Length: 93
Image (cartoon, rainbow, N blue to C red; front, side, top):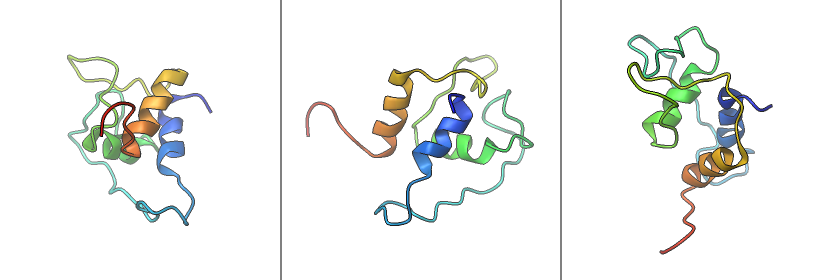
């Protein structure tokens, strides 16, 4: 599972015993969408928009904003997805 869109489910798909939002169920997407390449018919749309609203993902391009849901995910990108989602900090308090 190396596609950007699918990796977001890994970030949000925590086990039910996890302390943070075990029953997360983002609302369905409706136009206008945040990213031009993620229509509301995309099965990952609601998850992508949820993490965008949280500031975890910002997309891969602008004018128009794009997410690139089929692009591969690097280790560095996945580390950021997980770290920001869990509120981890590498340096400082």
